[in-house]
Amino acid sequence: MFSIEKFWNDVINQNQEKLISYFAEDALIQWPCTNEQFSVQEYIKVNCDYPGNWSGNIERIERMGNQIILAGKVTAKDEKISFHVVSFIKYKDDLITKMVEYWADDSDIPEWRQKLKIGKKIRK
Image (cartoon, rainbow, N blue to C red):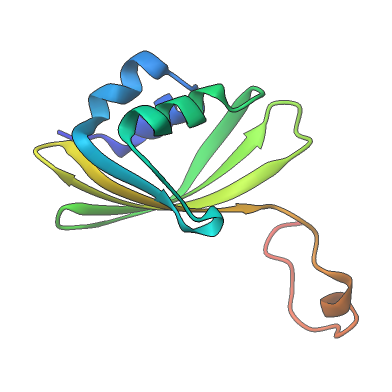
């Protein structure tokens, strides 16, 4: 059975040997924020060659039929940068056939919105 938790762990740990086992041979991976589409091999290279050492946690998982939606946080082990990602993962026969990911840098509230003095921080 497809395990999103094991997949997430292998993505975070940049485990090249295990990552290939999660994908159908012709799977597509898309990153709309940067207008990129990858084959499985290209995705594994991009993920595993990304510089630095990382940790991450899953913040939410939603399952709908043969699709999983995952929201997670990825943090550099030196804690200098972090990202949030939302992944839409379709799978068949326990293999990913398509994955669309939206990545965003974590940052402070922009000054122009701080001046409005509305809203509240989610985390302190």
